[in-house]
Image 1 (cartoon, helix red, strand yellow):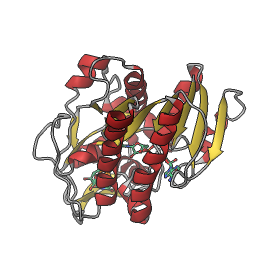
Image 2 (image 1 turned 30 degrees about the vertical axis):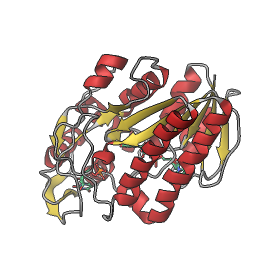
Image 3 (image 1 turned 180 degrees about the vertical axis):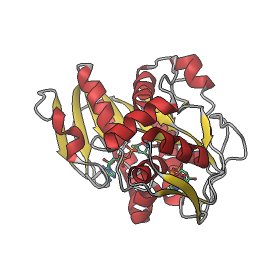
Length: 307
Ligand code: NAD
Ligand code: UDP
């Protein structure tokens, strides 16, 4: 199996490359290294079944593949806001280029979509049928709307050209190889704790998220790619439904790190979703997906890595 992983030098992509290479695939890891790091896949570079390609998917790319995991896109608010037009181009042009490749090769393609398609949800927890509440003019729109149009491109390439698509909607994922400086809540709070500084709770910390450990996410992505059932062209939420407030997260990280100071309130962020929790009934039923790592186990491993 020749498997192309776009965004393969990033946080999730590099763990996926590890799992695919271990399973015996020939892995082509394509990345422009904008938010990813060569270090993340350095240990794979001597492997005769692994190849790194430096390429920006805003430009077309031609290779042969049986499977495409399409993950290339900056993922944290700090990273996708740094160049919002480029974020839109990556989602639109990058996804079109990969769909064109999949069409030409007859490859199956999986999109790393996001819970952000639900925006600031008015339905809780969020099932795949929820159509979302996204502000198309807000600061998160380059990412949220970019991922929404990426889903539209996927389904239209399927309907019009018969491309064999898989749609993952990934909820907040954390673990080793997260970037330290990308402003995401888990990395921010761990770094604060390890430096004995207080976590800053944007908007007071009553908002919630549901955090999935990286190993569980990789497992879910591979299960979805392999799934042949009747619902294979529909979207699948992937995440851990254990929901915590941002304040609870900060306290848990301080306790596990054995350090940190009492969290403080910081300014609220515009369009920050107030609650987020996946309804994973579809993934459980169809894929047999079940997150196995508790928040405490996953955070303990992540804190060790950050140390
Ligand atoms: P990441 O930033 O670590 O990885 C993204 C990778 O894509 C990076 O290696 C980056 O260099 C690469 N990239 C970005 N633009 C590119 C371009 N134009 N051409 C080629 N490569 C490009 O982020 P991540 O957390 O690993 O996220 C991976 C995917 O999963 C993204 O599509 C993201 O939207 C999605 N996702 C992640 C989360 C999460 O919690 N981490 C949640 C929902 C969705
Ligand atoms: N957040 C926070 N302090 C930080 C970083 C983030 O309170 O130092 C909050 C942020 O406002 C959001 C939640 O934590 O409500 C998750 O933020 P993240 O950027 O990790 O992910 P996303 O908002 O995309 O889910």
